[in-house]
Image 1 (cartoon, rainbow, N blue to C red):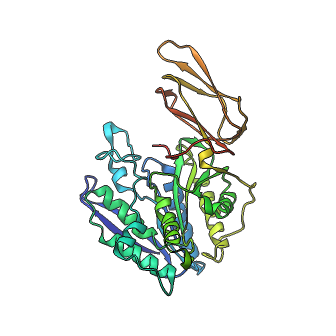
Image 2 (cartoon, rainbow, N blue to C red; image 1 turned 180 degrees about the vertical axis):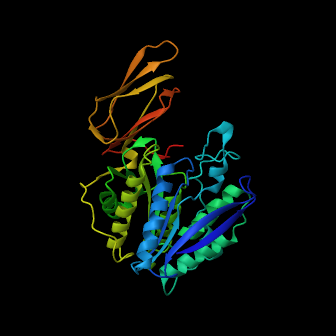
Image 3 (spheres, helix red, strand yellow; image 1 turned 60 degrees about the vertical axis):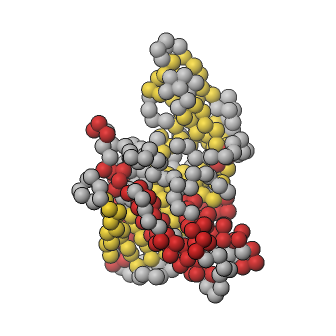
Length: 368
């Protein structure tokens, strides 16, 4: 295991912000995998799985079982970790700009084409990866947030597989991916026991996983005769909910992810697979978001992972200040995969998320 520290410049926590990268396998080996946790620095489950991966990968590497190259960043957001407003940590939004840490990543394809728009020759994939990396190296970040985004994307842009680990509020494990990656995402979801795969040709918001996958769509569309492959499979992997921080669970999650990487020829031995049921694959545009019609006390009746039909009673809202109750119903058939954990909510708060089979939304599909 090689350890690399990337400085992001000055910060309030210890005089500087820096990202720690753990490297396994031989540099330059393929397949190359990039895994990170904690981009939203208030989400502990992904970081816990990241550190479990570090220990398990160290043992596998000592046994000579790492065939490819793996870059692991268990805690990807030192800026968010340093934020502590009024004694309560908040790592989803940058305190200075108000921006979501998992939005507005650089468009590596656009930057690369601005430098060199000629059709690629020879090893197309290697050439385009080199162009994107050079373009990202040219960036001059204007803030620590921009430095973080550039540093993380530089680490991931050359990978064959990218896994960005997050969690929801209260949820079953679920994945987000590009619509052309549903088969690979479904295999990963089944390996880790996920309940839902949500896919879209464009999620909106320039999230990290799209910053890694969409450049290959752009290159393919730019040079159709070249037949540019989709050379990076990237997903956002949501490990259940905010409070699902059991150490044994994290160990099992890490082990399941490594078994899946064995099937992708990244590892040669990671133990037997744990059988899971096939996962539901649905369009992200088919997600119904049930919101609070009034401010009030949120009383959930249906747990994440439950199949529901239109008209299913999901819970109630005891409105404030009067105390009258309002029933909350599902509007579509599907799987209720996530719900809000806060029990005192504002009007318009997103309370339930149901993965439906038919698209009902368009435009920006990700929440704030």
